[in-house]
Image 1 (cartoon, rainbow, N blue to C red):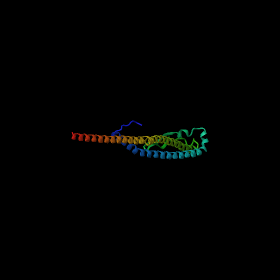
Image 2 (image 1 turned 60 degrees about the horizontal axis):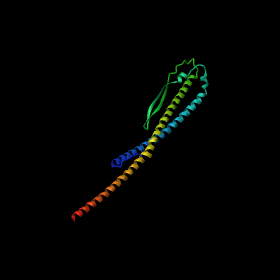
Image 3 (image 1 turned 120 degrees about the vertical axis):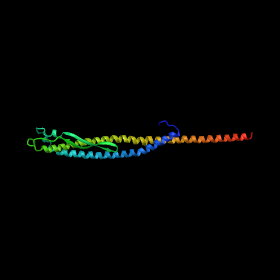
Length: 205
């Protein structure tokens, strides 16, 4: 515990600090709840996205053997050209939000490529987009988890250290100032009696 001064000025400083901590604590607790709720929602979205990926991969696996045929028909057209994201502020934290994946226009000879290529490109592009969205969701989860850890540390600091420390300092200063005041009153009474006695003695001289 930091050394404190047993003065009225220090008492005011400690009271002001206590009010400040007690005002900020509910805000931090609310932010903590928001972070926990958002982490839960993000995990749910991630689970759903994992299910979508699994379902699509199962569908693709039915004809994936065709991709081994001679001629690289799809690899170039399923490679992302741009991954578009936006930003959203959630409980004071900027979060990346997945928007879409942009691909190059698929330009190939319809007569020279197999009929399944169109379907393959659509399905594989969808899978690519889902995997990119999963990356963003995992990034969101990491940001939220880091922010929750920091907020938790601050809540604990206020609840378990700062507020009890200020309350104890205020109690000690008030006791000290009370004792000083009582002592001063006692000295004042003694001095008053001494003056009265001296006045009486002087009156009889």
